[in-house]
Amino acid sequence: MDYLKALDLLHDRLAPASYVEIGCREGRSLGLARCPAVAIDPEFEIRVGLSSPTRLFCQTSDEFFATRNLRELLGGPVDLA
Image (cartoon, rainbow, N blue to C red; front, side):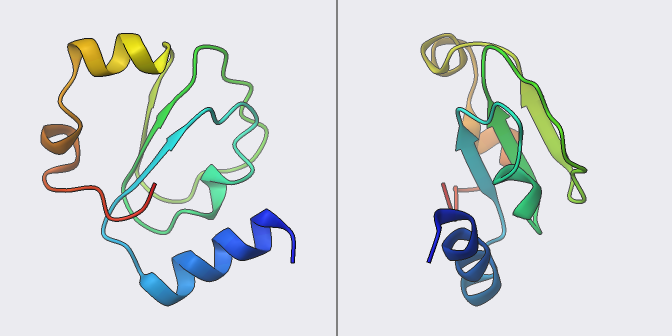
């Protein structure tokens, strides 16, 4: 099973309330999210539709975590990353 099918299955079975992805580039795996999501990547090239509410942060993960509070952005803990 490839990783996109596995991730889709995780979203289906776990039904997370929030999702975080670091290093999204084209957004193929990010596009599988069915819940509010936060995506962090310094060079996005999103090539798929994003159906859930998604906040994109165009910066390195170090920059993101030095200046932002993920729990506040999501309104609670991360359910799936």
